[in-house]
Amino acid sequence: MCKTDFARGVITGVIAGTAVGMIVAPSKKGSKTMAGKALKAAGDLVENISDFMGL
Image (cartoon, rainbow, N blue to C red; front, side, top):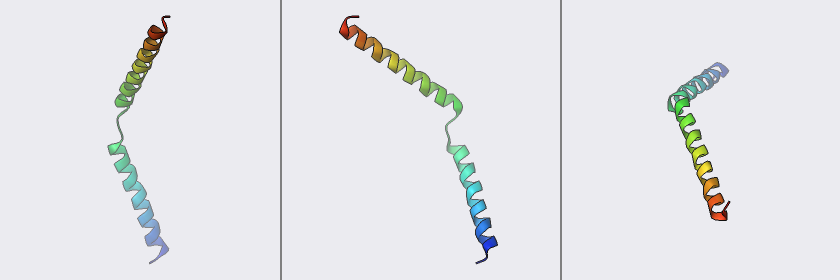
C-alpha cells in the first residue's frame, strides 16, 4: 500500500463524514425552539419555587 492510497482514503473518509454530519445535524430552527422551551421551563421552575416560598 502506498502513502498516496492511504492519504486518499483518509481524505475520502473526512469528506464523507462531513457530508453525513451536515445531513444528520439538526437545523438551527430546532435549536432555537429547544432553547425557548428550556427558558420557559426555567421560568416556570422559578415561579413555582417563589410560590412555594410565599414570595
